[in-house]
Image 1 (cartoon, rainbow, N blue to C red):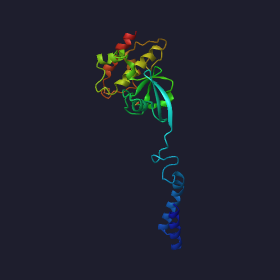
Image 2: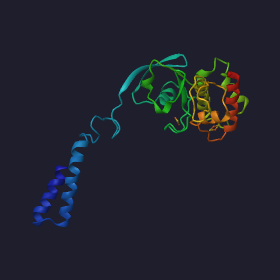
Image 3: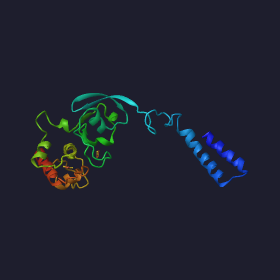
Image 4: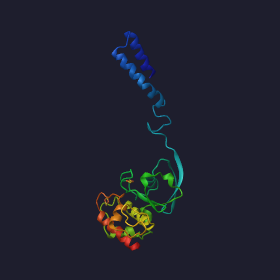
Length: 229
Ligand code: FES
Ligand code: FES
């Protein structure tokens, strides 16, 4: 930086005035000065960084997560999403990463019985809560009724969205049963888990299936919805 300025000043002095070339050199050097001087450390990295240029140091945090009834003591970067913690730190690969942006629902899990997109939340926010993934829905070899219904109605093709669809539908039926209305609910006074196909489609609209297995997914959920009644 200093060298650039000296060269530029000397160019100006020798020319006896500001030649176009010198003007460009001086302007460029001055414009770059605050950026270079303030933003980088002697190593060339951002302040506080000794790993990847431009990335702050990870802040490792200790936490305990309760997943499918099992306690997982973890030491992970505080910025880790719940989805990444499940998949990369707990080796629970059932929850899928479709978009990592809250748009596809493939990562849906249940937290204290409520469905959430695990890609949109930090793992550290869920200490002390009961997290249920697709691996925890069954009771040993006995499948959850929703899992059985998806098999019975062929509610999938490639299966990538299926863990999210199943976790979401389990949480969704609980929401409906508790009286939570949807955008198409006709009677706000009646809480029921018996849902019309329109209700099922609306309430499951956050779960995308690229194979378009929607008719079979709706049939599976309708089946369980009726059985729940
Ligand atoms: Fe979370 Fe798509 S991966 S919503
Ligand atoms: Fe393939 Fe849904 S079954 S994405």
